[in-house]
Length: 294
Image (cartoon, rainbow, N blue to C red):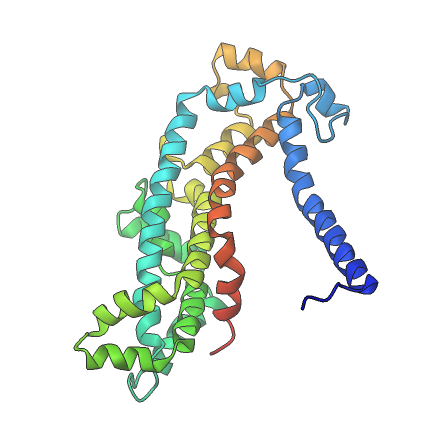
């Protein structure tokens, strides 16, 4: 027998839905506003007339940003960095977190290695030593300068480590009884059960690589090797007019900082926006389960 919900219950549910709709609107409003500004004229954007809908619709800001060889090249470099960096980060995190998730009786130096990695969160080496390391290893002006210095994100390792430790030990013991080694157990037992935390780490890794711009400015001497975010920062934000053609200078006269920056923000966020819906269902679960056990 199904009981009809009471008036108080209905009121509570209606209040929850109202609050969640309001919260969703608050989260989406900035992005929608940025999109509207990017499609508005420079005059409307400068006058503050743009809300949730473009005023005097135009695509000139996107034409300026996208109709350039440098933009296409930097976009490709960012995609290359995203692919290489994500694969390297995920592989390194899994291979490091798995042995560190063992008990001390199984891995006697576990505590030493855990602190070895954890100290790097508390104390960084600094920009100058990192730059000298990258330069002396011959990585300057290569894609590896953007990938290898951050090959082991320790925070993600800790998330994976804690998640692995929370898995039932009986599953690992059963795999060993069936003759599986550590690599087989990791691939066939731990990885399939760790989809939530792996999706969370994957999202963190992709966002980190896609949004990074400062290392491109530091490690790339040739602007032709800039990733997308570094290119946008130098060419659009600083607006280096000497690097522009006559047509681009004429186009910039019809644009404003607001519309160009809005187009930049939206284009920079678009790939992550496209990926996030597929990982969102794992995100909260991975964060919670990966942080409850040390």
